[in-house]
Image (cartoon, rainbow, N blue to C red; front, side):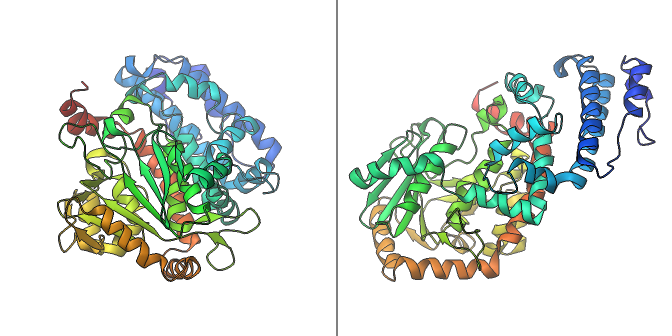
Length: 465
């Protein structure tokens, strides 16, 4: 196709040679004119979708048909990359009205589907995909990854999107009067409670050992917003709630990472990763942005305070990632940490960027690539955990650390943690990492290896299949 791919594989799968040739001939090259290119590329993507629709559904394809489908998708994605390389910044300005509006990631993706048809999946495509288990999906959400990677790679557009994701959610301010009155907001899968000089955010998904999924992500982010916005709390605390699992029943567990059952069943969309890591996880690390000030560590102004994590039982996967954003980690003596990226087949969020700062490169590689187990009360674990306490004494330890961290005042604490970021992870470094992460995680999420890993290491063991 334009010399890139032979046509024989498509016709061998039963597609009409004339249709394949016409599609290949329409493969556009960017001209620099947005309106002209939008029309030409949209035509090409519609034709690609038409060819795909003539093949059987993914679950019923032969090897030749599956190879043909992948060829069509790869060529369509290559065209998306060409379009975005030429028009990405201009498109972002169109979607945000010259960056006068702040759109969150999901809002931005939906808006893009209406402005450039075919660039990202349309709502009806997403609806159709969402009715299928992950293994049977075409992977149309990979195009979200290509789009958002291009946005984040652009300095102007990427910084603006980071700004949008660091703003308090619209819902959060509505809870502040009640929180000021009662000191408690309970959203089911997460709550925030004022205790002395701290705002304690508790993640609760008891059936799944407090794993993160679609049911937790919004509630956790709103609670983090409230904790940061509350003027009376000088410190934030992150903790897991009581769980139902027979082995840990009646015990607090920090968290089991991403909900692998729901991931396998297709109930966690690709955008979940970016909403999480550019949303509440980034807020824990960088604080809340203000509408009128960019979240730059030097030029901007953020609303932030120190955070403490209480690691009870274990911090697996995404919950281990959360520890890398904290100012002080307290762990029970028998607790452990692990990043099972090898068994999951996905990128463990920002851990690839942040973990080496704690443990050094070799231990970080062993943890991420070889699933090295890190007991909290070990020389390696103490590189992440600041204090080890006996089981049953966590409440007392939290109170003591809250008092110590808040004694110097919120202004001093925020200034010191901001000064550390200037050297360790300025916004430009975070944004560049996220540009690569957005693209690569999309392919990981729809990789056949992910399904195989889940079935080998998790689903069969848990009795789901």
